[in-house]
Length: 125
Image (cartoon, rainbow, N blue to C red; front, side):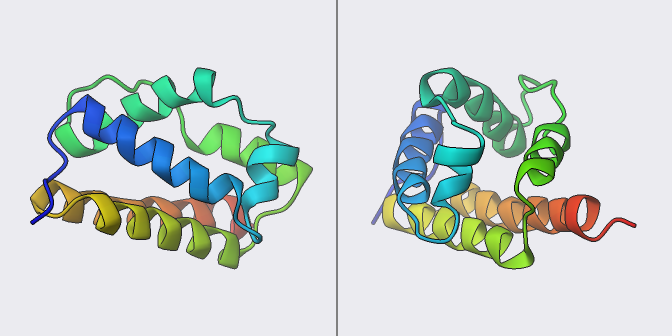
């Protein structure tokens, strides 16, 4: 039996494994490496705050997750399949490392976040 997501350290571990997959993914990797030029050392604490707030409702994230993604969309347009791959890789990473209530919550929220981003970034007229 795998552990559930219970701490900031678990979230950071999840994110490190996820980004390793995402950076190397043939469909979405270029968004991280060529469009955003994502520096994980800087980005990881911010996104960990985001996911801590999503899973544990601790209020650590005060930003706007849509805005930076909208800016990236202007540089290289997102498509539905990009968000779908993101969800797939994220869920795959969770399933490899964790199981339990918080792991399932993270997967549900990932799908919700991707859906909202698709609507607000791609499909907004």
